[in-house]
Length: 471
Ligand SMILES: Nc1ncnc2c1ncn2[C@@H]1O[C@H](COP(=O)(O)OP(=O)(O)OP(=O)(O)O)[C@@H](O)[C@H]1O
Image (cartoon, rainbow, N blue to C red; front, side, top):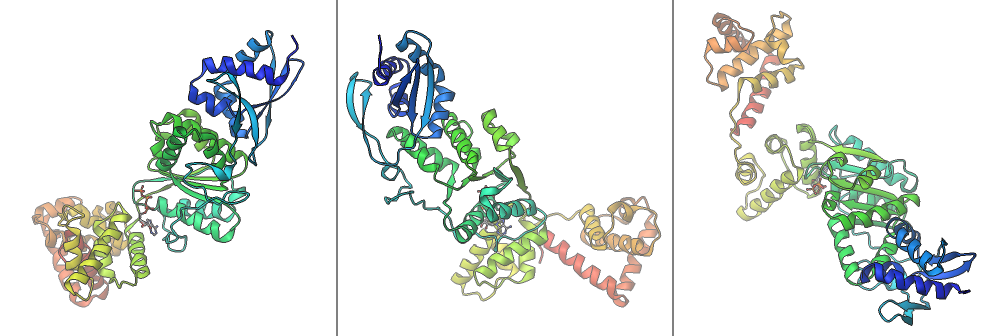
C-alpha cells in the first residue's frame, strides 16, 4: 500500500510509544515532524543539532525498528535540522490517545520554568551570573597559579578561537578557581559585550536539568544553553554519580565546542581522577588542564595585602607575615581572618590591626599556632636566607659564607631548642662539642661588630618567633 510520510510516521510513533517511556516519548519523539517519504527513505525534521545527536546516540535502534516495521521492509532515515524559531501549530500524534491532536511548539523565549529566561525578542538575553568583584586585576599572580591565570587570560582575550577548549582549572579548595572563572567572564563581558557569557555551578546545572525533566522542557533548556558563547562551569566534580546530567552535559559540550563556543570548567581534582564517564573525561582532556597549587609565603602575603587594600584596610607587613606564615593552604581562610580582625577591631574600638589581635582571631582557624621549632626548621630557614643547601651547611666546606651560615644555625638551634652541645655537633655533620662552643662564641662576637650577621640574626630570629607564635 502506498502511504505518505505523515501516515508512516504515525505508525512509527505507535511502535515507538510501546518501546520507550512516556517521558522519553514526549521529550524526544513528539517534537519530530515527518517531512517526506521517497523510495522508502523517510525524512524527519528535528529542532536542533543536539536533538539529532541525542537520537542517534540513544534511539537509533528504536527508530530503525519502528521504520522497518511500519514500512514492512527495510527503510532509511534522513534528518533535517531545523530550529524552531516561532510559535507554530503543527499536527502531531498524541501517544496516549493514538489520534491526531494539535500541539504547540514553544519558542525559546517562552520557555516555561527556565531559570534564565528573560522574555524578549530574538536571541534570549542571558544573565551572566557573574560577580564583578573578581577580576584579573585583583588576582595576584605567582608561580603557584601563573599557568592557570595566563591560560584564563588567553581564553578571555580570544574566546571563540582559543586552542584551550575546554580549559579546566583544577586545585584544592580556596585557591582561586572560581575567582578565575568570574575574571574570564567579566573580562569577556567588557571586551566583547555582544557575547553571551554564562557562569553556572555544576550543581545548578543539574538542578536546571531536574526541573526541566519535571516540566518536560529539557529540549528547551538545552536549546537555551546553546545560545551561550562562553560557558563557565564551576565545580564539575559535582557531576560524579550523576549519570543523566553527564549524558546531557556531554551532548551540550559537543555542540558548544563544535560551534567554537568556549567552555571553561573548574574542578577540585585533576580530570584523570574524576570518576565520570570515559567519553566525557576524554573530551574534558581535549584542551588544557592547568592546576592551582598552594602559594608560597610571599604570594600569600601579596594576596592578603591586596585584599586589605581593596577594602581600605591598613595591614602592617609583620601582621600579614604572621597570618600567612600559619595559614598555608587556603586563601579563603586568610580572607576570613582579615575580615574577622576588621570586625573585632570595630567592636573593641582598637585602632590598629596587630599581632595579638591576629593571634586571637586565628585561634578559631588554626588549632595550634604555637609550633615546636626543630633544628631541621632552623637549618632550612638559614639555608634559605643564605641561598644554600642544608647539606652544604652540614658539610666540611670551609668557604666563608658556608661557615658563617653553619655557625649562625648552631647559635639559633642552641637558642630556640633544648639540644645539648653534643647533640648540636651531631646535627651538623658529627662535629665535636668544642667546635660548637667556638661557633657560638664567634656569633656572639660578630653580633656586635658585623652588620651582615646582625641583620641575618634579626631576620631569622623574627621568622622563628613567628613560626612559634611568639611575637
Ligand atoms: N591569586 C589570588 N589573588 C587574589 N585573590 C585570590 C587568589 N587566589 C584566591 N583568591 C581569593 O581566595 C578566595 C577563595 O577563592 P575561590 O573562591 O576562587 O576558591 P576556589 O578554588 O574556587 O575554592 P572552592 O573549590 O572551595 O570553591 C576568593 O576570595 C579569591 O578572591
